[in-house]
Image (cartoon, rainbow, N blue to C red; front, side):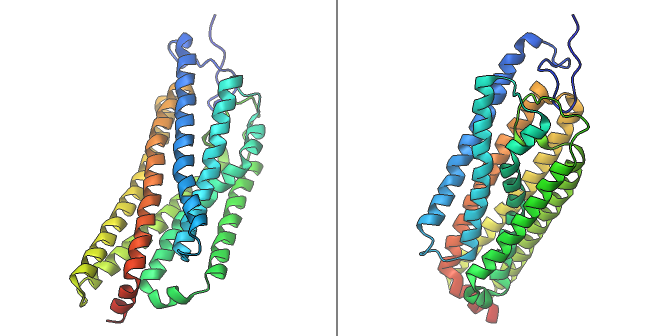
Length: 312
């Protein structure tokens, strides 16, 4: 008996005709679940740590950059938590009894948080840019109003992109094989999402390039040897952030595009490969957050120094 037809969007029937050995498909499904679960747990622990630090030391570290890191980590925490729930439910009940639209509403909150996270990645870079180019103004700004503006913009963009996911459904609304946030990235919605994410990522990279150039040329200002070492440390951190952002975007784009070409069906082999790349990207995102976190402490140590060289 031939295998049932397979919907390229990952719906319809759990047996894929593109999978050469159907009897091993359950094994691949188990691997897929374990990867998703590991991604979720790793991300929850790392981002949860940042959220905890932000709440615990919010008075001692009264900084817009630090607060933005905490808010971004909270958005990633929402996405990861829902991924864990989806993995557990999938492991217990097998194929989800949710349609694409049902899966969308199940993931509407983490989907919005995912959109907001891209905006906050740019805002973190932009905030650091302001701190380096306008240190005096940045030290005396009204943090509450400043952050409220950033959070309002991020929330508006996040809701708008989620709205596009709702109003641009697929032609069919069949049962999903699994219900993970990445399974919703298709149709006209993803054609809107990718350019927005690319623009925000490029803008963030541009901010870090300007910061690096600014600090590099300011190294020639009269300084103590200790301050020079601190500034060089920040330069290295900025380069690490820049490389990780570029690597993250390239890795995401290439892996998803090639997987769709090599594996017309996203399940199970294609999904496992994408999840392996997502595992790398999860580490990149967490490492990026901790590098920014360390940069924040460097800024505390030589904040007055930045004000000084700005005037030189």
